[in-house]
Length: 387
Image (cartoon, rainbow, N blue to C red; front, side):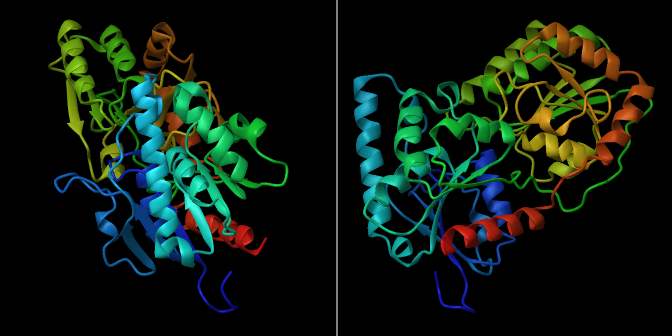
């Protein structure tokens, strides 16, 4: 670590600059960083969107291109060719990281995603700079892919000096693969929260049901569409889906649009794509939903809904269940179960129920602003560097 009085130097590594929950979470933390931060990203196509562009001019933060472009879904491939391509890409990226000046001068290496952690772990072989691995996904094969799971558990976690998990559920999924000597902490992802306890109560009659999540089959937009049609088809209630189709799931938008037509609710459903003002959008909703069809590690949208004091419906497993008290600050339904979600939508349609849930959401303990989350990162990075 640097001499007393100088800034802690952290190299943050990500494998993509696309719009994803992990990328926005790191972006928000870096905007509040008190340490000297370097963000290392693989190169990208000139025309591609870069979620980190807004870091330009940010004090204490520099952005560097390290290594070649990376392919989406490479760690999920099961073909021999796909596995070989991923291995070559991983070794090439690790070599680029190891040769970079940012790696040489860092006090701590922070891998923001599981894939970046594999690259960083290989790069750190023979080095002494401690590696902090960020757990954004559950550590299992459905979340990481077969190749990704094997490499992450055997290579990345085995070399980690520190682990940051976004929820207790996420940390528990990684526990069998973490050494007893590895420092670990649970820090909720930065979700764009500037203040908690906001109040934007719903109307007396439900008019707008919404979800904030990227369009991805496991995020459950299709499940919500079917349940919404069962409850609200033919009414003036709208379903608003905010989020774009990233990471190779562009066809899913077309599938959802076709499903809306089949269910005869296409005139009630709006696909908004990416939105910049998430808090402003959430404030317009009467009911907020999280409907992931596999366990959600955290659910930044849950934190956003609760901080706005909204009536929330969410799945009963994973990260959301750590934040929501059933029938006090939200309704929890059986993951993947359409009938259970329909029942929750009908129950939350009652204004008296929504008022109770809205008040409970505003009183949710433990919600952190982005500045609070950044401070917890700073403390953990410092502890790992000193050890």
